[in-house]
Image 1 (cartoon, rainbow, N blue to C red):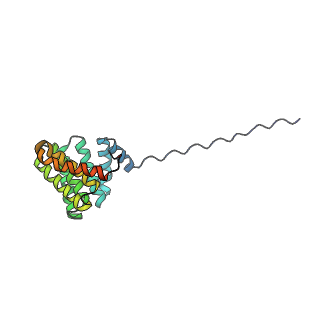
Image 2: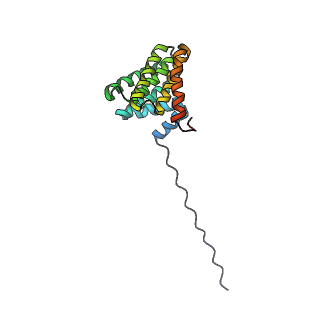
Image 3: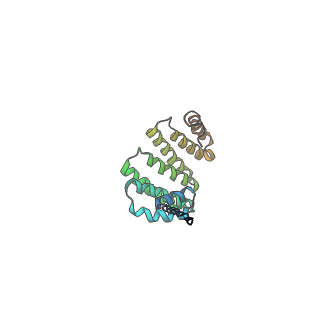
Length: 178
């Protein structure tokens, strides 16, 4: 009787190593998880190679990092620069301008500059209304921010934007919206 032939077991191919995340992906994770110093490092590395709208976004992200790290005056400087560039390149009725003004408004509130904060948030809200209309979910967000700024200093003025934001949220946002 012939000898049994041993079974040949094919070795499994090793799983390929996953691609490491790109610098942009690592930046997004750092920003999402509020790892401000890590995000700032990525932004400082990535920003010199960007232009146009991407550069403006990077400036706003860098300002968020500086704010998160407690460098409020540096964040303020970056946002003022971004606002100037946006208004020159994109005009006065652009959502990017409203976002930068809103960020600066909230920062001014933290810096105990309530009048400046109010003016910036009011302008940002007006821009969002012009860009998106009075019934857009983004408008509700800006009305809420404006109402929060008014609340400690001018509670009587806070009521109208907060009520409008609530009405918009109830009628325009999905039921499970945060």
